[in-house]
Image (tube, rainbow, N blue to C red; front, side):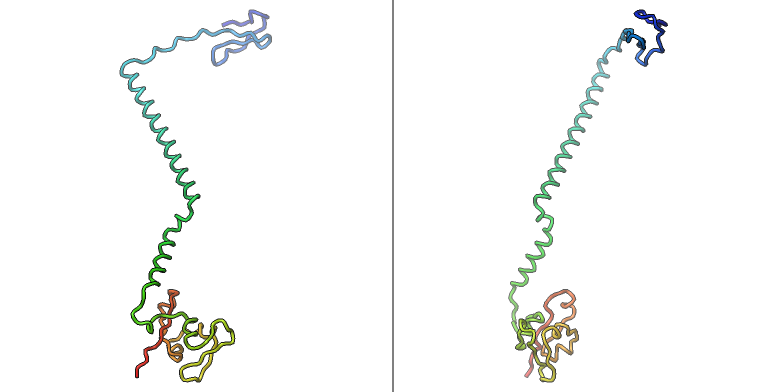
Length: 180
């Protein structure tokens, strides 16, 4: 190790981590002799090293392929949002098919309040239209007819009321069977 710079004579500092000494005054640096590197591995260590690198590269490739697959799936779902609603579509198709099934007796078909109101002679489009009970003692409009929730009240108008169907938002009125 030199203590002074051979070019300008200035004092040299501590050697760098690489082992070189540099003069702060003129910039001269000492060339460090390279240490000889260990001989490359041969035989079994070389084979194990190569297999390790191959396995590492395989998993890197597999990770990249999985990322690409995941991105393509996400973009495909963004492009086709209707696939997310497949259950709703199937439920709608099933409901449509169920509604197409004819009933054996049309007099026992379930009706909505609007259909029942119309069957009694009322006009759902006319807000002043009213219908009467079977005995003629009471007259109500469509909005009051919709609010009836009692079996006896609907029976006064000649309809059977099913609360369980009402809760499920299905048509819940059916004409009472008339027995002679």
